[in-house]
Amino acid sequence: MPALLTDQAHEPIARLLEQQLDEVSVLFERQLASDLTAVNALCRHVEQYRGKMLRPTLVLLSGLAASGDPCDGAALGEKHRIIAAVAEMIHMATLVHDDVLDDAEVRRRGATVNHLRGNETAVMLGDYLISNAFHLCSTAGDPAINLALGEVTNTLCEGELVQLHHRHDHSIDEATYLEIISRKTASLIGECCRLGAALSGAPSEIADALRRFGRSLGLAFQIQDDLLDITGDQTVVGKSLGKDLDKGKLTLPLIRHLAVVGERERAEAVRMIERRDAAALRACLIDCGAVEATRQTAIDHVAHAKGQLAKLPESAASRLLATLADAIVTRRY
Ligand code: FPP
Ligand code: MG
Image 1 (cartoon, rainbow, N blue to C red):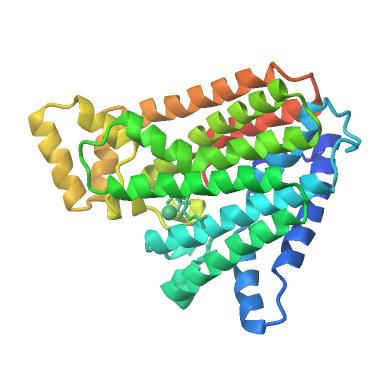
Image 2: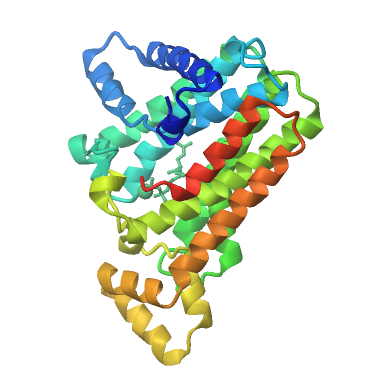
């Protein structure tokens, strides 16, 4: 059961989801199995990064919700499971590369590949994962899916490039931040939802509503992720924190604070950034209310996401999507 939905484990829809996710894991592991021990060892290592399985869950639940499935799983086919595994592999590739960019040491309570084996191996392993993702995707035999996911990987690289462009930019505005997170995070999550629905034969209004659901969820997810980077406890979150500050990436609470404060407070905040004084900055962003206001923004995106579900037929899958959306902003890891 995905960790974000453990409270629902008794529901028939949750049991169906769990069984489908097991099949997705088999596809994932089979695709990455290599006859080379050295390659296999690395793949086994990153497989431990699979925790929340958010993206595969969204492909499957969207496939079910789009057709108002009565929990028997008839709406889900092999293509759903393939695309669920592909989405997770793309996500994994981006994390392995992201940890190189962030010099991160910990991911899902274990050592990052770059920390364990160096940047060269991590870059190559990320390449291996992305290559395998598109190889697996091709087995679905539908070029439109390859095209759609290729567009997403282009988009998320653009998001990272814009983010790099704005490193150490103390004047970055909220619109630019939203553009970055929309591309680097929300694009893949939105497409997971749209593809899940499209593979169930849903009409475009339903598939598009689910894409909007996923995109808003993705924005909320990244805002919460960025909040955890400032306020979280590394032993609970299970990955290196404080990396945004280390790498000069300004996120929403800080962007908002710098946009509204007077000259003296701004200079003070910039000093904290330059000294990478995470504790002082955390206290400052909590005291001025920027953390709370940002949390509210994430909640607003979740509300917008849930609003899209009203366009779907009533079903247990749609209710589970709403529960999942709420869990995005209450999560502590
Ligand atoms: C998380 O950032 C990063 C992403 C959501 C996208 C990363 C994408 C790339 C590095 C481009 C690589 C592209 C391909 C196709 C392999 P974060 O640092 O805020 O999240 P974290 O807290 O989990 O580290
Ligand atoms: Mg990172």
